[in-house]
Length: 270
Image 1 (cartoon, rainbow, N blue to C red):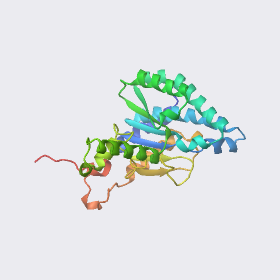
Image 2 (image 1 turned 60 degrees about the vertical axis):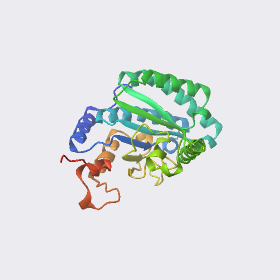
Image 3 (image 1 turned 90 degrees about the horizontal axis):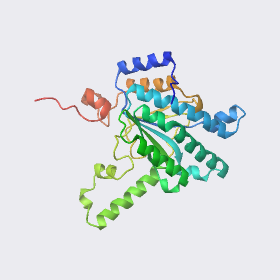
Image 4 (image 1 turned 45 degrees about the horizontal axis):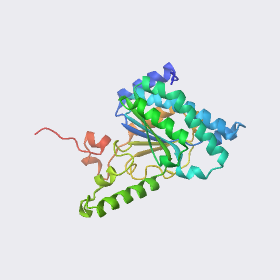
């Protein structure tokens, strides 16, 4: 990923960092590629290609901000029902992007992971993903997590099956099943829940994305279509996030400074 952020926006990123808490995990529903292409009299594939350029910019911006996890809704299980030509185009774009971007991700100390039913992906996509995972597995600046062939209901169903299997084997007692135990069976078990969910394209729904994990995420929806989404829009979303009071079911008077951002009370010394 070559530098794509303007000096002006880079300076704004520095201002945002000094203003307040930066979400450690941001999740994005990247919507609007097809509509952008239609508005510009182009085939849908052109919208997806333009959307990839947006991904480059947002990954760079999040890494510069100090975001530790960025999860991008890349391809849902429902997307398999789209016309075969579009699905094939998307799979080829994923392969091409992995081949062209992995080395730069590695240079930028960014780790690549994915969540979803990888068994449904074409073999070439699986192989490119595995190569990218291996190449970047020791990187620590940020984790770029691609939700591919993913849906929240699929993930929860899969987790229930695994828990039921472990209960039947005697590895888990029913009375010991807690929220933390359920979380440990999810695809995202190694990362914190997103503090901020961003959706481009204006639709007011979560589209079967991270249903368990976004229970207390702040949601920011913008009418900007994904191919036109840029660093300034990301800054707008984070600035709005920083203005909000995150109460996690409590009242304002009960909220400590730490609780406002993480949902956990700050442990003060005795």
